[in-house]
Image 1 (cartoon, one colour):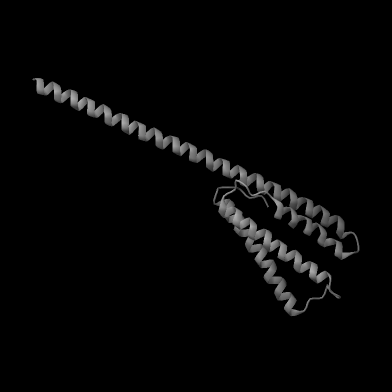
Image 2 (cartoon, helix red, strand yellow):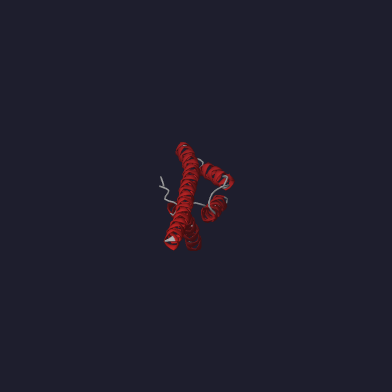
Length: 165
């Protein structure tokens, strides 16, 4: 009889101990899941706010371009684009995921290359007429900028961020 009582108490103690351990593990996993969810939401918010700032910069650029198109000097039309590129190069990437930062920096670089190409064309005589080599170069540069932007969108979407374009 004593053996049955000892065995029953031992079984109860072991079961109780296992339930405490399992409950603790489940609680820890739930807490980690909750922290991960909060972290994911924080990243989404940071990327969304960052892209909202870019969208505002684009809107300002578009407004300036529309206003400048009414003027006759085509050289001034590059200025809003130059200002936009300077702004995107200066945007604060702190706290954003590394893959998003890399995609953004590539986009900023591709945008800078586009602006430099356009600026160089405007400085040439007869800049409105492109030869075949310049046309090919322009297509390559602008395609690189588009592809870089697509990588930004892809990186943002990987964090479940909705992109407003």
